Image (cartoon, rainbow over all chains, first blue to last red; front, side, top):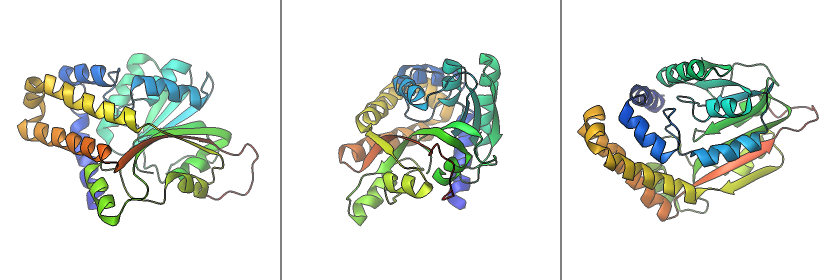
Length: 134
Length: 133
């Protein structure tokens, strides 16, 4: 559990910095977005994934290990689907929550582990994640 | 996570994710080197097709996107260097150096064939049946 605690603390610390303008400039040049991304999913790859997830208005997407909301919020914004973002580091979810509001995307955040998802069976039309432990 | 994902998906629902993994067919020492070089999420395992099947998914499409991963890793290093003054001030010189060293270590591991990144897509059986969850 020690390693997980350290990883969560480290991620929380990093998410506190992702809204800094220098970080955003770098992210825009590397990933093609400015959500506070920490994964290696580029915008081109996110566009490919959005197609594979077959999202459309009325559908519900779960993003596990969502961090600050990339690419889950982007998927929802691009397709009109609703999104639920889950992760353990709360500071990433705070950034994601602000982004949902700012972009007026239908969705919410929830602190939860990907291993024990607190949802009923058959709740989601699609599930996604980027570089999280499976 | 895969079992839980299968459980919360509707019948016919889609899962699509990207994951960094230890390459197949490595020696024990090379696996340890891959885990050391990769992000904290990387671990050795039985391989994603088997993990997906065990979780209840049937047809699994797995695309190797390691070249894109390598390009993105290099871009992070390059762009952090380009913004080094501002980023050192923001995160501190030690953290800046550690993050760049970690990325360079991952680049080396990818080039040596130790780490791979995959785009994996599957769907839950559209017919509701006894679950493996």
